Each structure stands twice: as structure tokens, then as C-alpha cells.
Length: 260
Image (cartoon, rainbow, N blue to C red; front, side, top):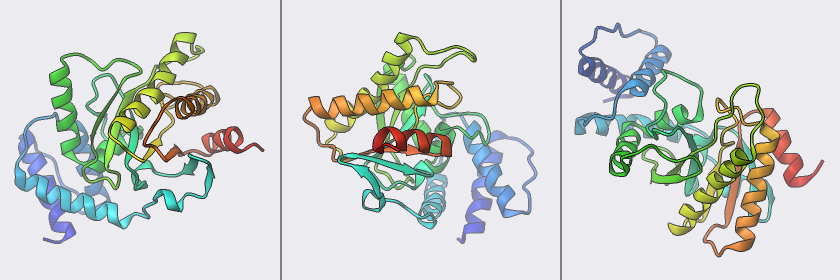
């Protein structure tokens, strides 16, 4: 089965599962967007092994077609701390951090640009299923500042660590409690990574997207918390990567980490 056949199979499966009538476009780019959208809205229900096999082949091929980046490829570093700008789903590290919501099931908005959507879309259906098992066992929403670890499935990283950051109302400044909760996100992720003997972790800019945390304040909290953790704890971690996507965050982190 070639890539186009895989794509058609996956689309037809998800459309039939919904018992819906959706016209499949001819254009492959539009087909791929439709697949992502259908994956985004799919609830965490059981799924056929054949679907997962073909999905994994398709997504793994997509992952391998990217320019994957390991710690040895990152040039901007100061000791254990590293800075890299780009798509977090390209990072070949032990764990990447996902800025999740309290349901911990990923983003259900089709094609949404948040990192939660991007990570789940590249990882595959299994990530939502594993998160659902965790949440059913926990039997309550995830607390702000806590974290959970899962497999990464079709991502180049080995694990995804999911954490829920504080959300700031539009036009308001973060409170002292918000700042403490954001620091707790970073510490919780570092604790989990150390517990699982991981050597590398890549943090996204937690809470600075749709959660509205001011970027510079968030970066200061992130760097301070990581430095304090590394100074005060025995840890397996050898590399802590601050992954940024937009230029503004890159300049903020570069100045804070390395000076002008």
C-alpha cells in the first residue's frame, strides 16, 4: 500500500466510523488536512488494529521525512541548557513537553494551531487513548502545575510529558499564584523525567499561547525554575532544551540565556 492508498484507507475508515457523509477531496494536501481534522475530533474510543498499523506506517513515514534534530545538532547551549527554534515534533529527544488542558485528551478543534493539537496529530490516535486511560484511572481533571508521562508513538521523541499551565484572562496580569503554578509545571516535568531516568527533555513555552501568560515573564520563570532544579537535585538529565517557535520567544530566551 503506497502513501496515497494509506491516506485513502485512513480517511474512509474514520468517515465510515462516524456514519457520516464527507466528500474526500482529490488534492493530497486537502486530504491530509481532512485526516488531521478527523483525528482531532475523534473521541477516545477503541479502534481497529489494522487502522493503527496503517496509521503508524503513514505517520512514521511523515516523521522520517522531516529534518529531525537531536541534542547533538543544537548549537546554542550553556551547560545543560539549550535553545532551539522550530517545530517540537522534529526533536529526537527522550521527552518533549506538551502544554495540555485539564482534560489531558488533546485539542478537539480541527486543525487548531496549538501545540497540543500539533503533538497529538503527529503522534497518532494512540496518544489520546493512553491519555484517556490515565484520566479514567485518575477520575478527575488534571491539576494545574502537575504532569503526566506517556509514550510518544509516531513522534521522534520517546515520550511526551503533558502539563497543564495556568490560564490568564485576556487583559489581566498573572498573579503570584499563577507564577507559582507555572513554575510547578516545569518542576513537575523535571521530576517525571528524572524519575524515568531520561537524559534529555524539550520544553515548549508553557501557557504563553491561548493561555495568555506574558512571554517574557514565562521565560524568566522557566529558566529560573530549571536552573534551581538542576542546582538542587540529583537528576539523570543532561540536556534541557527550551523549544521556541516564534521569533519573539526566540529573542527573549536568547537574551535571558546568553545575554545580548
